[in-house]
Amino acid sequence: MKWSFNIGKVAGIDIKIHLTFFLLLIWVGFSTLFSGGAAMDVVIEVLFILTLFLCVVLHELGHSLTAKRFGYPTRDITLLPIGGLARLETLPEDPKEEMLVATAGPAVNVLISILIFVVLVISGIFAQPFNLTAMLDNFWLRLLSVNISLAIFNLIPAFPMDGGRVLRAFLAKRMDYVRATQIAANIGRGFAVIMGIAGFFINPWLILIATFIWSGAGSETKSVQIKEGVKGLFVRDAMVSQFYQVEANQTLDSVFQLSMATGQQVMPVVSNGNFLGIIQRSDLLAALEKYGNRSPAYT
Image 1 (cartoon, one colour):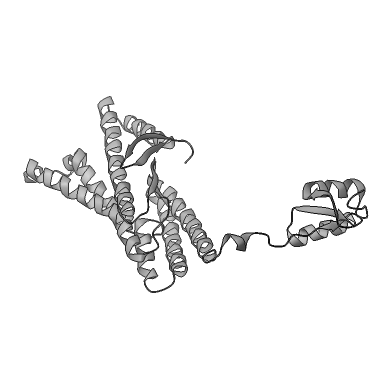
Image 2 (image 1 turned 90 degrees about the vertical axis):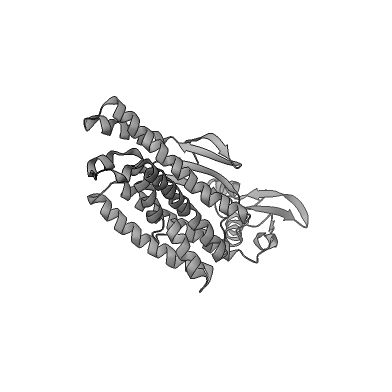
């Protein structure tokens, strides 16, 4: 992905950060300052975002390592302001495999939530008198709530999010893969519209997520349709199997018509069975403009 740079490698998978991610950190820092926070508050908020995105990386590694078990390697994981993106070389089409790969990410967030909860219980924070403000300001309680939210949010059946892929896998057990993708994509776009509208009233980030879901659903549907369309085809099926040649005395107009009808970009020119040369379509267009329709193909 453009404007991304590598920060490391985990299990053979490149971990990258998109430059726009730093805009998020800058926005968080200035928002904290403008809301009356001190320098230390800015440091804590930025550290919280970095820790949160560490959880996002672990989420994406959950997808990637599960996919690797089924023989689907991952190119890289890129951190964006709206989350993480794991690029698999190929996506699993077996419904069971896709369901396991899709649920692996949210499962990681659930596991992180359990670990944080256990640590907080051991620390005795829940034994203290209830204070909502103090709890909302607690770094680890916030991280706990965000991980729970990530697990729930990602399981919303909005394709191509994790929940949407689970939905597609469920449907693919009952119908063909293309139809399952189309239905999941339409449901995903419906959720995208709802999120986009909600973003105007609740949180602008929902508008960005809605845009991602809308475009992702459309592009993946087209990809699946193309992939399904070429199944069973061989290279020879896509190759030109018949070549046409023209006589030297044929008019440029007739050569052009033949080129357009056959899609052949280069036309061999012969005379009495002897090869004289070739006419490329770009040269043909230039000759038509310079010499006119009735001029011969070769002089």
